[in-house]
Image 1: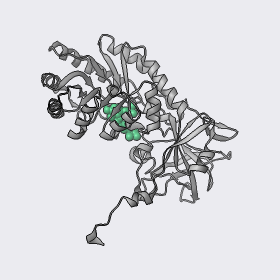
Image 2 (image 1 turned 180 degrees about the horizontal axis):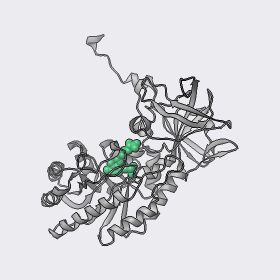
Image 3 (image 1 turned 90 degrees about the vertical axis):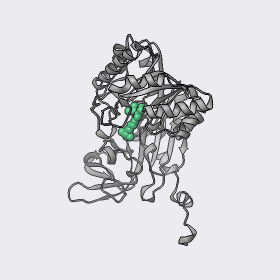
Image 4 (image 1 turned 30 degrees about the horizontal axis):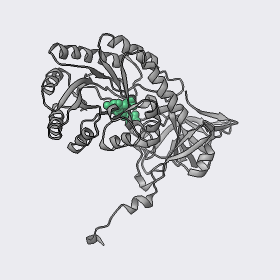
Length: 419
Ligand code: LLP
């Protein structure tokens, strides 16, 4: 469910016609719907309310825009961050440091120190080495770091290989069979307060079974750790719930997810933590683009749009599908290849796709672009960094400027010895 609908034949974000935004901001541009964001945040939160004690940390990486974080902070969300930059964003958005969880295999000493000083709620340690390094910093600063140990449960998430994280061969977490011993050692290390196990097996999961298998496995480990005399008061179940990108795709609903979690964790007696990203932000955004030209091909015609793989990387990286729709459909349909202007063949959004017939100058959108869209944008081919807009009813505002190539060029230097 989203708030991008046709009114009198023109696609709107809530009450705002997309051509009005394109006319003022230009294209390509990401457009977010605040009502959709709020709705998704509430549906997920309300679904989890059947569980006794819950904390939700939004996976900032899926959409780190400050305005997005503000909306989620107001809905009671904390933040799952994976870098110093994401931590600063979460704090700038007014998120309570206590609701911040810090994940990632490569947290630097400087990042660990900054997060400790900021008083974040939990470090999700991905190795014993990281735990010992954090402990030293904490002792030096006279602080205690509340920690989870991320465990690699060796479960196949059944998603794209590049976004699977819970198999033994993936870099994440500690090996399942060593986790108990590592937890025990870290629990006795001054400066650390071990309180949880954490897991995250992958993203864009279309089925609940792999999650259930992983939760069950890690639940058993939790019992063993407790039996060895160590406290486990929290369990961080990660993110990963997928969303449909294609009409007709069926994905687990938040209430089905919550019911599964309730079944598995019934006797755990912990505060459950969650790190959803895509399920909150995926549907909340579209990428608006203009057709630059339609070029004849050997097979289907090439619809060349002014958005490219630098603006929306998912199709190039993961062969991901994003629905393509004309902003003001003319009526007929066509079969076409949709591509961007970048000079490599991976800059392809769709091949031989049945789409609304479009012509040069038409506006169109890639849907379900609110998660892992703008956040993965770059300036390849010296293209501008794509701007972002948020709509709220009949109001809208630019929430991230277009960064033009001249600004980027101004940050570059030619050393004297080249001049
Ligand atoms: N927690 C951890 C530790 C994660 O690594 C991730 C995502 C999440 C939570 C949130 O997962 P979600 O609920 O959004 O599935 N760029 C890729 C997705 C990468 C996901 C990375 N980790 C894409 O565009 O599909």
